[in-house]
Image 1 (cartoon, rainbow, N blue to C red):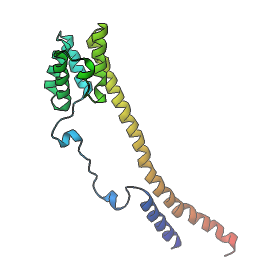
Image 2 (cartoon, rainbow, N blue to C red):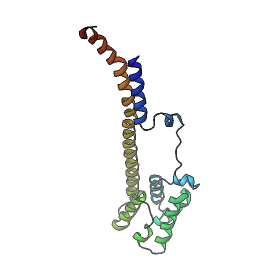
Image 3 (cartoon, rainbow, N blue to C red):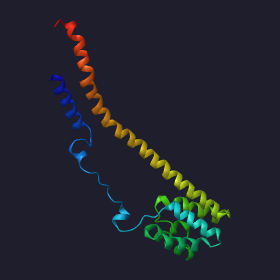
Image 4 (cartoon, rainbow, N blue to C red):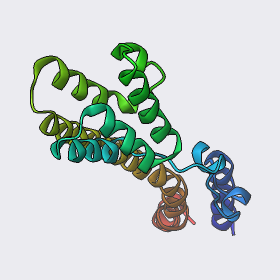
Length: 184
């Protein structure tokens, strides 16, 4: 009886200490919608946009026209950004001003276009490499998040299962073996 009480006390303590256990764990998990989805807009993928601009430029389209066409095809905030950059660039604005409102995710596309324009290097190859870098970075971030999740999922199991194993497996064995030594 004492062992059952100890096990129940340990389980209650673990339920209090482990975030997400108990009553909160019984509720279904809901994800918060992303900002763009809440606003009714689709999120733009910078890697896809970079590949599309590369394909357009490979076919002979100038950079400003490629940005405009890809921006129109993508839609959403990323498409609007590309169209704005194309419009500002075609009106003679410098690169820094044209890309001033861009999020950091669009930096590889800006850098590849800038390098191609300043050095005369083949822009399609630079853009394809930039798209591959964006995808590799995104994969690395997702892999790191998955590894953090593995640790966070294992923690409650350790805090609940190990004390229960000790209370139900090790303690009765120690009591049974120590009984004759104590002099019962």
